[in-house]
Amino acid sequence: MSKLINNFIKDLTGSVIQTSNHWNKRLSVSLVRDKVLSRYSSDKITKVLSDDYWIGYPSYTYDRTNPRSNGGLLRQFVIILRDHDPELFDVALKKSKGIIHCFALDSCGGRKRVLSARRGKKSKDKRVRLRSAKILPVKEIHALKKDPHNPVRNIVIKRLGLDNCFGDFLDDKCRWIKTRCQGMASIDDLPYKEILNESGDKHRVPLSVITNIISQLSDEELVYYLDYPDKVQSDYIKEAVSEILTSRLTR
Image (tube, rainbow, N blue to C red; front, top):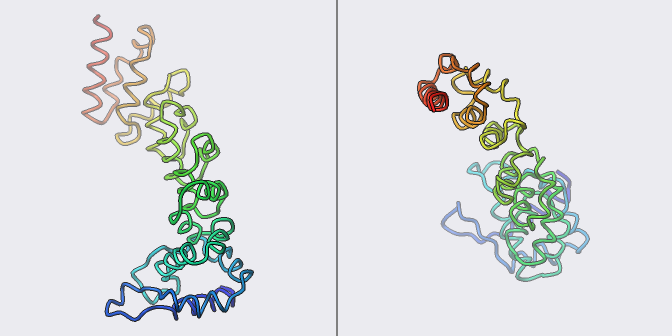
């Protein structure tokens, strides 16, 4: 932590109103003005807001002895900027990082929010990218399909519609995402023989994927899988696949 950030946190915590509830710290607007806004130049505030220290900084923690336990105060500080110093709030939207960028996105709407979310797509903080995925126009979130954070990709899928993008996630590292997409894909796009071989493991391949594949096999190929139910450990899957095979081969 830099000296500037350390001093900022001290001044911010020194702007708290004393209340009987020590879990609910509240900032005094007048104290924030006196201890922070009047003491720090706009350049210093910009350096504070854009410091990498805020990347991964928790929004809340129950451990009050944790030196990174001021998420609630930071949220209030951003709101004070929004309501009392619009120019510095614009700086927060344009240059802040980590948890402060999250709070800035949470504290506004409209075009400014979209522009800030556009910057947030490339943030090192996954919480900022998650917000950006929820905020940006659908046409601008395709790059987030490859985001390393599972919840971000889930939001992208939800907003694009699974039917419109399942092909991009057939090999996703998240099993839940991958199997949802495999459950609706054409067998031409799947290594279906490999998947059926894996399904002998009770927990590896869900029924939706297996039935999707079995239902697409030609009658000629289906014959080679007559003994497939005997290889499956799950009684539920065994029964469902047996019914499909019987129905297909006796019509």
